[in-house]
Length: 368
Image 1 (cartoon, rainbow, N blue to C red):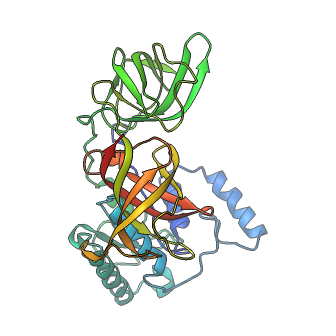
Image 2 (cartoon, rainbow, N blue to C red):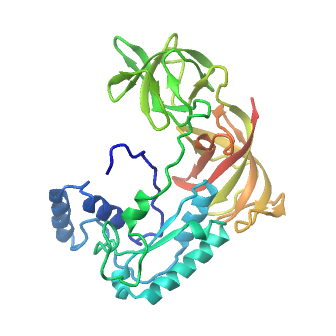
Image 3 (spheres, helix red, strand yellow):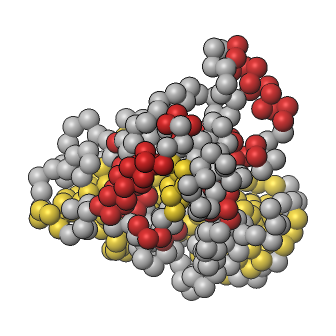
């Protein structure tokens, strides 16, 4: 791989046991990112546990011709809701159906129907017949699918369009942790999501509402004058003490500080909940590095997931599988941004009872 290629974030989605881990393991192995001896070690462990033949994902991968299953539908819907726009569809386990083109076309048709339901552009999706287990069409073209003349998986990944780094947006750097380092002082650590961080910048941390001048920036143990989107950095700000800021704060320019929400309107998708969700429900919202209990003050509308149109105004409740517009009140200050302005800080997951029950995007923010 070329050193100067930009990093891309990929989400591998799909139903349980449909081969996600196997595919990633195979891809890493074929591109020489996993040493041979590590694969051999897994092979031995797998055989000892009666799982011989699975050295790539370390999980039994023996379900055959399932087609589209519920989790696949859920994940596609979630991907669309959270703003993922590029889709590569690996039709896996072709070895279990003897690389039959007819079965491949059936599954392609099912997936196309699913993508249309959530308004994904079918024309932009790539469909690839693969066997993660055997390695067909993963890192090289397979002679088992001579009826297929499209890209193999690695080609498709390498030809994804390069996203424009959001350097023109205002700086937003969610804080992951805060350290005290002798000789330097207080060092907040985090990843630049948008904009740039430069030495000499005047910055503001919200919602803690403190600020100062950036004295030094460090990346990979080297001092640098500037950090851009995707860079993980530690930095020191004049006048900021360890107790002044905390995980979940967002650093931004003093003249354009991060938004702090009194309430916000959001679009949510309920994935799994044992009963129903009504106004007053207060789970934990995970947004960037913040984890804040938030109350769903009102359920304003139920949305038809296939069209995005309002299906029902002011419903009494929502449940698993529903999409809705809601008004949310954080129980303590939370910095969050509208997704159409700063998408990197406009998405969140909702967790309760030890599981992710919903996810969503911020539509608008009523500031504190």
